[in-house]
Length: 177
Image 1 (tube, helix red, strand yellow):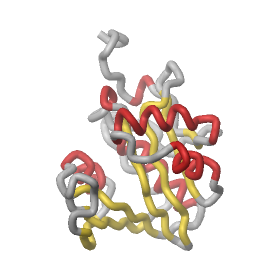
Image 2 (cartoon, rainbow, N blue to C red):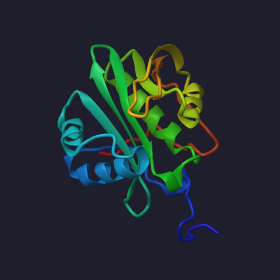
Image 3 (cartoon, rainbow, N blue to C red):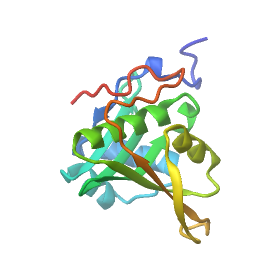
Image 4 (cartoon, rainbow, N blue to C red):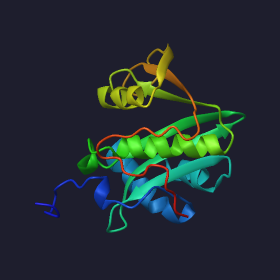
């Protein structure tokens, strides 16, 4: 039954991706803790959310709770994707693809020609997500992460208007401010 407590809801019960700002700091910290085990500090999130060269997009559920986010830096003609997070109870519903694709499109509209990211070599879900979006592995960094796992360097040529759709993805290019 839809709406049962604790039951995951798909993108159809979510708001479209929106640009996050400093007002979303606490929500970003909370999602970071639950989805990424506290990858970034408060100060790092404050910088991400207040710097004009950085893009942070989020998806809220219908209760206005942040359930997915993607962050990136614009450096010359490149979008460096620095974080993608989906709330654990919302995973495998297409939100990762939706928010990442929205970030890529937003970066492309801002002038980025390519997107890059690092992904843990043992993170099979993320590897599958990025492969579905067209990313290719171009290198690696040995023992890059805290747990000793390797990082794979991945790249994507940005094609403006190219929308990755899954069964769950409805409108990944819709933004609200």
